[in-house]
Length: 177
Image 1 (cartoon, rainbow, N blue to C red):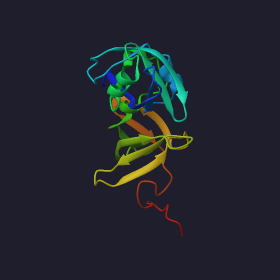
Image 2 (image 1 turned 180 degrees about the vertical axis):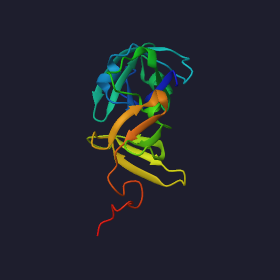
Image 3 (image 1 turned 90 degrees about the horizontal axis):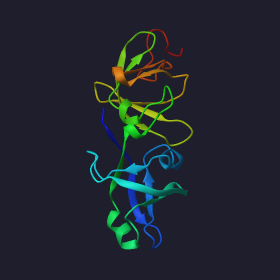
Image 4 (image 1 turned 120 degrees about the vertical axis):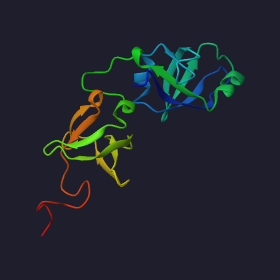
């Protein structure tokens, strides 16, 4: 498991006091606002203390200690920021997306493997899981309890209960007549 996880990218300065627009790659500004620091690299280098964070449209407005003017903020544009997973306490049964990527997707009833999780997006009310089959075909399903039965990233799999045809043509008499 990766120790340092991407949280977003700085896209522009905001004002003249060093505040920056952060494109969020995580759940919310509320999640990030509890964290004391961010890092400049995926190896945990360049620790920077968070001086403030607030929501702004679909982004966060971030203040970092040492970034005190527009020029310093402009120099940060394009930088991806990271957090240390040790700074985060996730609720029981919740996982970082990074930990779910690459997990095998197994049928909860038959044990059949449909492929691996290649992406998880959040375009609306629930996450959308993208699964890449062994032949390269991609399938998508909503991350809701009706489909997603169990997540075990520490063991490298998730279990699903798909509707007929979700992972290819309907089989075993499930075809519509």
